Length: 320
Image 1 (cartoon, rainbow, N blue to C red):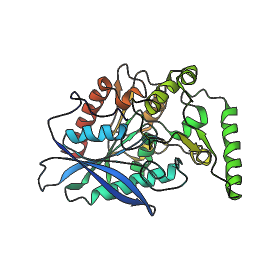
Image 2 (tube, helix red, strand yellow):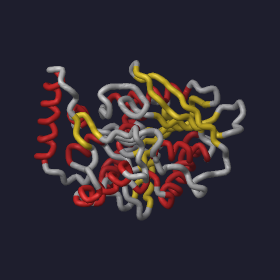
Image 3 (cartoon, rainbow, N blue to C red):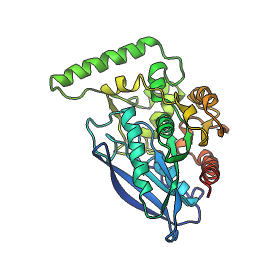
């Protein structure tokens, strides 16, 4: 059972209607959850698209943030990316940056057409790997009027040099060798080759360090486990990700505002610190004291200030 149900501390006073929706991205059906504040009437309101981490699904941290932002009066949409969760696409668990960006734009198109959404007031939130997808999506789609990231990373950088920037080059070479072999095997009509995303058990996770352990704990224990969240990734994902740079075009977003939320103890914070100076104004790098990368997924003491900051950011940026 997933443990990401909201506690009373995270719930506001606004009742929320949750609606299951579907829409298309590159001809494939995507599944989403639309969160609508109760009693909003017939007017037009700002909306926020929320995109989940790699291997995640809409019921995990993306849904948590979407629901909380709806509690602050926004119409929000959390969705499963192509190849993930309840959305279509084969092979399952494939991570394709180009498709992920297209999915975000498809979500923006879908929510723009909602009867209660002001299509001139749409924001975007990317969490973890989706932070690195949200930036190029916003840079190239002027319908997105404000973008924020939480524990944002570039998945390409992550695979090239590791979560801490210290990964030996031999690791990447091994992964690319395996990706090439997997493509040849598929050409022979053999089954898709995959690798495990997480260690097999707690002992193995702890042996690989705090960052790996926290990811394992969130995705593989009742804390954040969801049966549709991918635990394996096709090897062919690697050569799709390795040349991707999620923050390269961050400067193209200005004069639309950028908010980057990072935990002071996040092992991945160096990516945000390197990317942020390249963004144009207005921009803000907001630190959550004491939070690690994964802490910002669901821990109340860190999610509460993050959501409060996000709410203020979107209100100011979208002219609410």
